[in-house]
Image 1 (cartoon, helix red, strand yellow):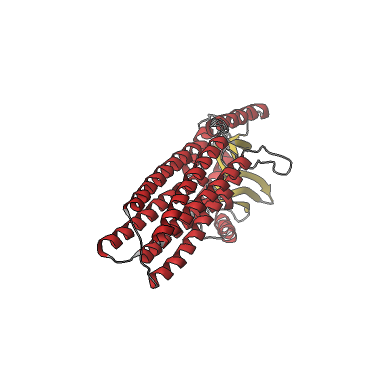
Image 2 (cartoon, one colour):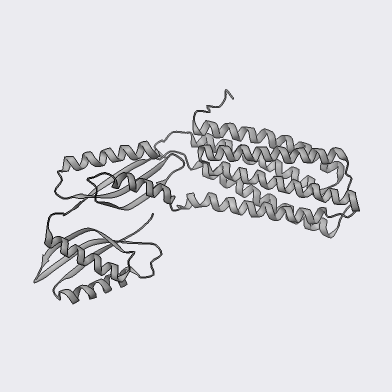
Length: 375
C-alpha cells in the first residue's frame, strides 16, 4: 500500500487496479488448471476471461498513472482523459473475449465432449464466484468513491464474470446428475452476457469522450448558486467541458443590471467563480451581460419580443436584448436560446418572428443570433 498514495484520486485508482491484477491472475491460473484437467471448454474460456481481466486491470493501472500526470505544453488541460481510454480498453476486452467464447462454445455445442468433473473442481469454481463478487463490490465502491467510469466498467465486468462462472457450475452439475453435456450451450449463454456487458460499458465510456450532456443535478446546482446572488437576474449560454474527473471547465453568461458599476459586477462574478470552484471543484468563467432594468419603454419592447417567441414555441428564450432606432421604427437585436429537441430551424424561427413583429409595427425589424443549448 505504501507504493500508492491513497489520499489522491489517481493513487487510489492505481491501488484498486493493482489489486484487480492480483486477484484475476490467481483466478485465471486455478481455472486454467481445472479446465484442462476436466476438459470443460467453459472453464478454460472463463480462465482466459480472467486473464484478460488481469490485462485490462494493468491497462487501468497505466491509465490512472497517466491521468495523474500534470498539465504540460502539449496537454494544457492535463491527462485526465487517459482514464477514459483505460475504461475503453476494459470494454473492448469484454467484447473480444465474449466474441471468442461465442465462437468456441458454438463449436462445442455442435460437437460435445465427455467432461471430467470432481468435487474439488466445483469447490474451486464456487470460491471463484465469491472472489469475483467481492472484487466487483470493491470496484463498485471505488468507482463511486472517486467517480471513475473505468472502475465502473471493471465492476460490471466482475459481476458478469460471476454470472459466467455460475452458469459453468450449473452446466457441470447437470453433467454430474443426468449425464447431459450442456457445456457448449452454457458457454453461448455466458458469451451473450459478456458481450452485452462489454457493449454497455463501451457506451458508458464513449459518452464522456464524445461529449455527453452534463448531469442535470449538477447544472441545477450551479444555476442555483449563481442565481441566488441578489445582483444576478438570470443565466444562459452554459457550456461544460470535461477533460477527465476533476478537470471540468464551465462557462456561462450572467445577467446583471446595466446600472451596476464595472468593478462591482466584476467583484460579484469573481465571488461566484470561487464559490463554484469550492462547491464542485471546477474551473468556472462567468461573463457579464448587462440588462436594462429602469426603462419602461425598453421593458415594453422586451416583453413584446418575449411574447412573440413564446407564441412561436414556449421553450424559446431570449437574452442580450437591445433596441436601436431604425428609420421610422426600431431594430430589435437579441440572442435566442434554442433547445436541442426543437423541430423548427433557425431560419423558420427568424422568419416567423419577423412576420409577427410586423403586425405590431411595420417599421420594426429584428436581428437575431441563435445560441443552440449545450446543457
